[in-house]
Image 1 (tube, rainbow, N blue to C red):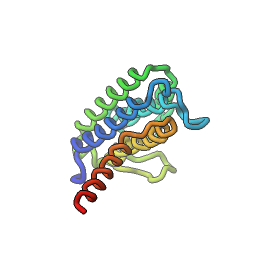
Image 2: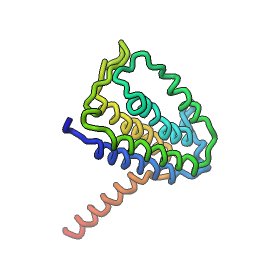
Image 3: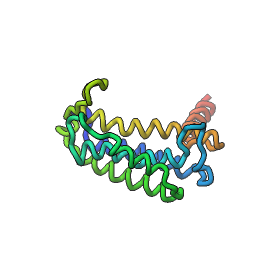
Image 4: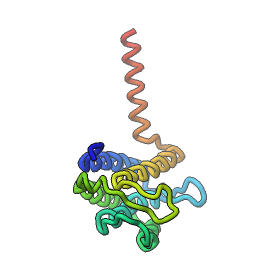
Length: 184
């Protein structure tokens, strides 16, 4: 496999987690109980979910080194993670959890060999697709985090906070406009 190495995958995840940590810091603690709609996780629950959800792929790929997911008791792994989302925590405890779990995950990614990343993992019968490369599955962890960070960025807007990535983009556009105006 030459498309991507473990160091780059780890660095890419660290960038995603760094941006998640900024969002976690920017939302005031008194809004950590905010839920954008009935049935949705609160800000705190979403952040904890993002932190502890790394434990599932850790178990599958690094602890058990499974190449076949048939027979996996998914709820035995996911159940405790879902319960953790309900545990009351302070903002700082959540930020610390995000940092610790993210550091651990990035460290695991760095240990992955090219051969490991290229392995095929098969799913239980009936799932589509029936198999994926380990690399694709590990890349999905980053996609999962970005999905939930997008939800949090909408929550930020609902709470009157302009997300940091939006502010940075607005600053770049303003600088380009100013440079264009100066050169005219």
